[in-house]
Length: 367
Ligand code: AMP
Image 1 (cartoon, rainbow, N blue to C red):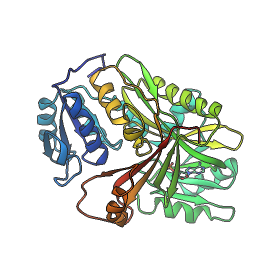
Image 2: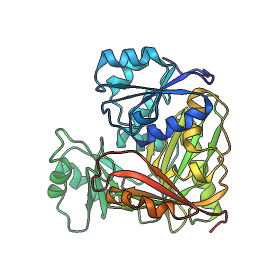
Image 3: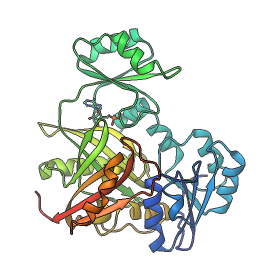
């Protein structure tokens, strides 16, 4: 179904594909605006189903369940970008899907993502495609070392990624990346000697209006986001470049919704885009407590065709993910007067699992 500037007044039902914490926080943001949320996900014990009006528990390839879901909601959005293409296509035949599914297809494929960005005139790490160990070796001759080999599809939190140092054997790197993935296609990226990793959350409304949040600075541990500090400790000119870059991506993709744009900043202040996530982003959780309108409310406003709200940061914020057993520290967090605790209601604690987050607020400064 083509995207038109359709508007859905409060009272409408928003369908959300995916039942994780992003769906939960989106549903929580939709409620005060008077929307109902209907979650579609395979797991009855998911964070989002605990806070929604309705849930359909079914597999993403269950055509009948998808069709019933589509017919019971006014529009559909999603909280993860690896929505299978067939799922999107079944839904799209019956209901408006925002952001558009072709944006999903771009963000599911690191090669298409980089090519699309470069076509928009946006800088990324230099890259090449590799389908065999020999192609990898040739790509490394061109791109130099160090480099990173990534699986083109289904990679997240560092999965399917191999760092290539001066002495890494391409055949071994290929086997490590591709060994467990049948028909794996790789992307080789030149190593970016970044000084900081930042991200910008951009929201774009159905009629093209945009807002961007201040760039957050991201610290990863074991490839999983550990902490986002907002604002990032970068000069204002670099922050403005980052915001403009995110807006160019959103406009170039004709996005309706919220997108997280992950970037590298080099010591010279060059901004390179690493990855796109066409949904609310973990590095934007600080906006719930640090801004008048959070990324989740902005997402609801965008997909529902409402005017966007202010993304201005009223406080400095440090958002820390509570991973695995760290969730048991909730009592200590609650004892801190300026800490805001967000738990996701997950029943099973696993190492590295995102169980919740805490945002600590500080007076607004440029740090
Ligand atoms: P990604 O899954 O692409 O977000 O990569 C995970 C992490 O690996 C990033 O957050 C960076 O810390 C690091 N990384 C990925 N690609 C590169 C690159 N081309 N150069 C340097 N570091 C990278």
